[in-house]
Image (cartoon, rainbow, N blue to C red):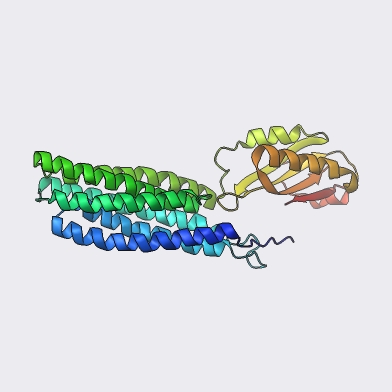
Length: 317
């Protein structure tokens, strides 16, 4: 068994620092927007406060996930904790969807029962939010290499845009005196949050359900592998993601009846094409010289083993 330890490096240290700074700034802004929203009677600001609470939790989850992902693999977790970040991203996105629905419901209620809004307070607090969220989003963009940190970046980028929209709403209310602009703005913010979160949920669910990685075609992978010299057939092919950026493959490959020592070149060729064309580096390839009756999910029958049906296993890490 091969156990690969994931050692935390400078990248992980920098990511942790960025997340610490982002959490502290976000928590401070949550308090400011909540108090200002109550004083200004602005649903848009209160929506921003609620959204920023979810951002703080998102950053906290990402921080915890980065810690777990840096832990080495062991005999209990042979793949390490690569999916910790995927789980955090899923929770983040699912929480955002719930918050967007709550914001939308409250906005609809406000449309039927308008509330006087203080646009100046909205604009001042939102301006500070644009600066803070923009800086945090820029910092996260520099370290967003997986779906976990991308979900955190998405939170902050979305906040930057929605907070800028609050400023625009404040200007609109000052110029027209129409308080319905505030709940309409909240509906637009909720729609943006919902739309941007759906993509993260779909991607993380695909990873957790061990679906084929996005952008890969099993048909193309099989064709490329079967083009390698010495390969007769590729079947029982499975491709999935161990984490958000590590792809794995397992399959059966039919070759001629040759000694295992002579199949090394075939295995090397398969490893090269899988790495070079599909960025698949963790592979388990089972060689056999008698075709399986059931090409998908095949299991070597005992009588075939007795007749000399030998499987050679090639592992590429």
